Amino acid sequence: MAKDIKERVSSTLLASRQNIAEQYQQVRRFSERLCEPLVTEDYVIQSMPDVSPTKWHLAHVTWFWETFLLSEAVPEYKSHHPTYAYLFNSYYNSLGARHSRPQRGLLSRPTVEEVYDYRRYVDQQVLALLEKIDERQLEALAPIITLGLNHEQQHQELILTDIKHVLSCNPLHPAYVTRVSAGETHVPALQWISYNEGMRWIGHEGESFCFDNEEPRHRQFLPSFQLASHLITNGEYLEFMEDGGYRNPLLWLSEGWNIVQQEGWDAPMYWEKQDGCWWMMTLNGWREVDKAEPVSHVSYYEADAYARWADARLPTEAEWEIAAGDVPVEGNFVEQGLYHPAALSSPPASGKLAQMYGDVWEWTQSPYTPYPRYRPAKGAVGEYNGKFMCNQFVLRGGSCVTSLSHIRSTYRNFFPPNARWQFMGIRLAKEV
Image 1: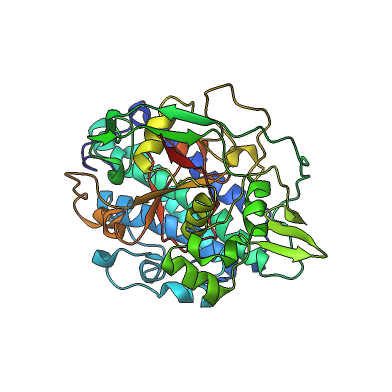
Image 2 (image 1 turned 90 degrees about the vertical axis):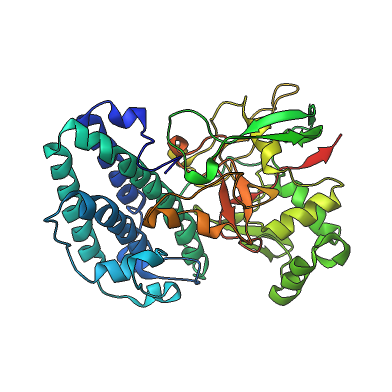
């Protein structure tokens, strides 16, 4: 979804009918590949209201294809099950009533097997549609297909972040997959990379796909600033903890301090102290905290408090985007199969940024608001991003469970400031 969902088309999707079908099948197969380590019981648990069962994710992305592609493009289309539109609609109010989000874990039916049947049915219908339509129709449908592919990639990330929370609630500390930790490595000294003031262009440009919240491209004046050369590590965050960071109200925003008191926060999410040592739950199982790895699963409030303690601040999203513009989009993404933030393997070259992409989503101090002259797309797809532009903060860069093909320098993720279950971390900024 970009300037207008009816006009913006990914050039790769227009290359050929076969290419579209292959991209569709590749994305759909990857969703199911991520579920291969799971057992049936794993699919159905909802461990908190923000977490959705794996089964629901698989069904919801299928409902998206059914609702926004098949129902619009195939007049004679018949749904696999008429009630699925009620069960698997997420937040599209204009499409009718839907099942309560906090109660998704109460649905024992449809079964996991029936959800996979639903996916196969819709896949057959989509591929049949792609085979029979002409080039004019193909071009007209390409924008919604592109959106559907990116939407499913977003839920692939959620499948992993949500199942991590589910498994963390189990005293057996089960692993999603087993991986051997690389062990602690030497963390290079943090450098400060300087950027001069000036009027800069922010936001997406070109004809490649982007979400509507990345546009319109616009100018913004940025004072001179500095950005930290790498992400804050577990070891650096431990120094904040050991210095009483969670006990010092002077470091915290008022609402953040209230949550620290109410929830008893004293460490990042998934950390627990045993016999004097900090341990963490990972998708690879239960293990001791590696001080060299980027700290993860911290809220905006924690990131902001750490920045104050470090005599720094969080970057604005414009600063992050300008700094990232010349950095190759590469790093520790879901394709690496680590499913965990990785320690910096080698120091960055002098004056260069490291870990800008992958590993952890980086909190910015910027509230999630529309860019100047922003207009949501027409119809139900207009509910995709725009209506959430309130009481949330922007994160940038992707994480270890984001697809490499899904991320770019203008990508705007967003979450409320108390959220922690996503792979969220910290990069510092400073005034010059």
